[in-house]
Each structure stands twice: as structure tokens, then as C-alpha cells.
Length: 400
Ligand code: PMP
Image (cartoon, rainbow, N blue to C red; front, side):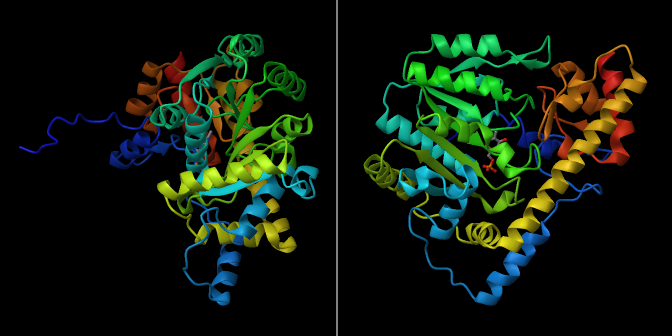
């Protein structure tokens, strides 16, 4: 017998497990609304034209495959900070922004978690309820203590702002607060600008450290600047912040693993020391980050013409999602007018949180071949106009 025969099966990942079940299904009408990956109207993955252009340019330039510095590609790091704060932000000029390239948003969160574990021992991380499931894995695996704060109100299918602020108020002073920069996953429910201001004030008063997870910049409204409203507001109100960024969705670089961890700190001296420690952590995790995707992002953001083209393609993706949202709401209202379906278009980003129970989700999958996570989340990025009617039939059959 193997010396590892005592190792138990790990539970399947609640999100990626859905894709595996989808692949196994032989139903010709099957629909995968599980994973948050953009699809075209033909339900095919999309490589942006601007990415192809950048790759052609890179090939022509004949880049080598040498190791990058531990902190990553300089032009990528500059582009990434500019995207987050806006170019020419005073914090950049004051050298108090730390940026380290990471293995996409997940890797950035993981480096951040490791840093908190190492340099802020005993600090608790507060995570929204619900949240992206991997947040719990990431902080848990780093042995960082976490707890949940109230976020979603099933009654209003909106934000439980009173619950959220009460929980953050009750948290020990100086806690870390994990916030979704925009397009909250899985609920699609974001605070209003006024609510963001109040959350920033609360963090200031309590000495909390906001840790933004920015996985959808440009994907919520289709506009990079609008989607960076919250982290910029916090920085401009004088808070120190941590930000994990991902290019998976907005540049469609999912499998290339392109992202970064940023800290905006009060002074340049601290920034220098923190970067040195982040490098020490990354050195033992992946030594130095991958080159290809970082070069793509740097080329696109650094070239004014390509940057404009990217914005157009991003708005196109966000626009297609908004379009199927509208179509789905109309189809649901036509089939089941006694229920309020306005949440479908009120929610923002890739996802809609339908409020379906696990039993109803099982009906969606077993009877209607709609594959989705058991929390009732559907990815609208995986829905086409052609499939709206079938999906609406399935939802109405499942919730009635
Ligand atoms: N945070 C959130 C909230 C996400 O939804 C995702 C992607 N599903 C990520 C982080 C990280 O994704 P990636 O590692 O591909 O950047």
C-alpha cells in the first residue's frame, strides 16, 4: 500500500468542478454558466484583437526568455499602477506605491496573505459573506485568521449596508478588510459611491487596512476609470491600501496568469522595505513571474493606439453582458410576471446571483442542462442571446 493511502479526497472545487461536470455531459443543449470566463455570442472563448497585435509585435521584436526580476517586468508594473491609480497620481511621484508582479489575482492575493501572516501576526481578515470561494482557501492556507462580515441581503437582493458596517465596526481596530473593487463576485452587488465614502471613513476611524481585490476593472461598467472609483477614493482619502489586480478578465489573459499586488503606503521608506519583503516571499513561491502575459499587458497599456483599441474591446465585452442581462430579465418577466426580476439588470459585472437554492440549482442542471454553482450564481458572460429563452424556461421551472 502507498505510504499516502491515508490521504483523503479533497472536495471538488465548487466553481471549476462545474466545468468538469459540464464537459462530462452529453446533452447537446448544455450551457456552462459556472466559471467566470467571457464567451462570444457563439459561446466561444475570445482572444482580444489587441492581444493578437501585441503578440505579433513581441514576436517581431524577438524577445528572449530570460528570467524577469523577482518583482516582475518594470514596464508592466508601471502600466499596472497607472491603470489602478490613474497616471500621474501623486502617490506614484512620491514613490510610495509598491507593486510586485504576481501569478494573476490569485497569486497577488496569496502574496498579500503571506505578507499579512508574516508581518501583521494576529491580525484578522474580514471577508464579505458571500464571497469568491477561493478567498477562504487563500487566507486559510496561509494560516491567516479570517471571519465574515455581512454583505448580501436576500430580502432586497441588494447590499446589507447596515449589517456590513455594524460588523466592520465590531471588528478589532486595525483589522484587514477584504473588499471587491467593483463587480462583487458572486452577488454583482456593489456599494454606491456614498456607501463607499462611509466605508472609507469607517476604515479610517477604526484603523482598518482595506485590501481590495480588483479582478474586474473595466468589466463592470466597461470603463477602467469608473471601475477604479473605490480604491482611488480610499487612497485619496489618505488611507493606506493593499490591492490585488488581475488581467484575466479585462484583457482575457486567463491562462497566462497576469496580475500584481500593490500597496499604497504613507511614505517612500516603508514602501521600499515592504517591496523587499514581498520579493522575499515571491522568491520562495515562484522565484520570478512569467514573461509572456506581462509583456502583452505592458505593450497594450503602454501604446496609446493599442490602449484605445483595448478600451473599445473591453466596452464591447461589458456591453454584450449588459445586453443579455436585459434580454434575460425581459424573458423572465414575460414568463413569470408575478416575481420581481429587476435584480438581473441591477447587478453588475459577469455574474447574477439568482437566489436559487441548491435544490433548484440541481433541477437547473439535471433537467435543463444548465451548469452553475450551487450558490445560485450564473455567469452571464457564458450566456448568448440565442440561449436566453431556454435559460429563462429553466429558471422559471426551477423557482416556481
Ligand atoms: N478575485 C475574484 C473576486 C475573482 O472572481 C477572480 C477570478 N475568478 C480572482 C480574484 C482571480 O482570478 P485570477 O487568478 O485568474 O486573476
